[in-house]
Length: 77
Image (cartoon, rainbow, N blue to C red; front, side, top):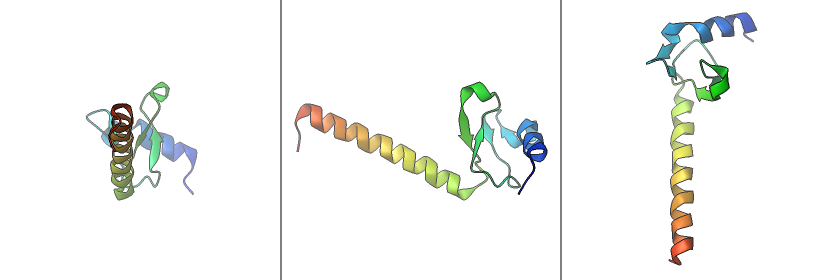
């Protein structure tokens, strides 16, 4: 298990942040990490393939729920 000092070092290293907002670190085993400014929540480690599956899954869920909501409001079958 990685110690907290190493995790903090990776998190604070600007090289691990693409465009300042996308966390990308192959050495970091975590999938979900806090954003650069912790008050803004969490982000995913885009260096991990599972991150993309999670992102696509969340987008698909949002689209499905939105379409279902429109069908319900408009009384479509």
